[in-house]
Length: 435
Image (cartoon, rainbow, N blue to C red; front, side, top):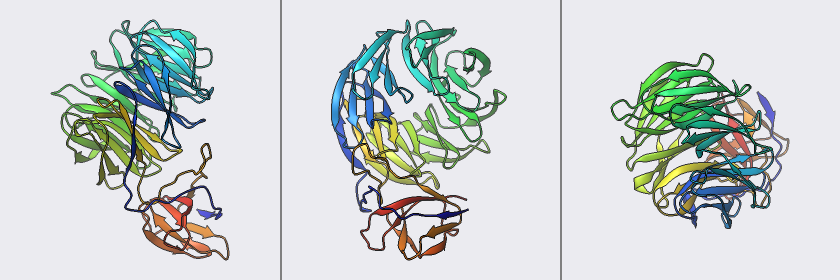
């Protein structure tokens, strides 16, 4: 693939290779549990289960801009990009608080008639699928009108959920009966019930191979079940470490990561072959796990170590261990500001980290948009008369770029930046080299 790169100076800054990962720890409230990102206004929202409120953080400046009172015990919190609303699901009060993303005020509160635990948004039909306990149901909530359209009854407590956009299905794990349910979003009916290992936990979806993964957390049978979404059958059951509490998918490498809470490890699963290809030992009770494909990293929150481990997605090597707040659990990646957030459950804080060190993208003006990356597979072309350098994520110079065609086939796939020729020149354009 040939690509002409236009060297237009953008609003990016550069950070030295020795810079630290942690930027700041900001106050939240009692027992922060979940996070979401408002992509239109660039705010990050933290649901504080013990504080009955939501902390709002400015994604550009890291400042706490307001605290919003919601219902009792807010747990799941999700963003609706269709109407720029944040939906906060309040467990004890059995309600959902709808927050306007522009004004950060509650504009509606609706009863759900169940204790909401988790939820997923389907952008194809603008509906939320809300997991509820007592009674055990999945509530289908209209994202525009806030009206409950239907309620699906379950025999056991729904626990984990994910959305499959290829087949327009929502998958729900129920722990007590060892089942994953496939909901057809066109009809809002159960299309299949899939038996997996004991006590299925959280779910994630592999968009490349159209598979769903769930950790099964029985102490004597800790596995990850792999479900083929085309047939809704289990195609592999993989032995991992004890108590795989969370899974995530990294589309950059087509790999799935399982955080094994009781085994102090992270298992790496190849998305194509359904094989465990690596086990990364990590002390401190790995809890949340999140991929940031634009940076090539995977982040794992280690709850009892008060730290986040940064893993190189290509090599599996541990890049850094970042000290954060007390008992980090849930992670969020904000690609707009290239930052990673973690809820510090016992510290009533949110820790904010850079998405990478070395060269770091950062918009200079709040609300500005970063120019898109250029994708290159072989030849990088610069306009005539201009010279530049190509640097990797650490800021290391890997290639001198001359006007015209530059052969980059010898470089490893990953993220690079075109920079000026001086040692402190800021990045001009991000380049992703693929094969």
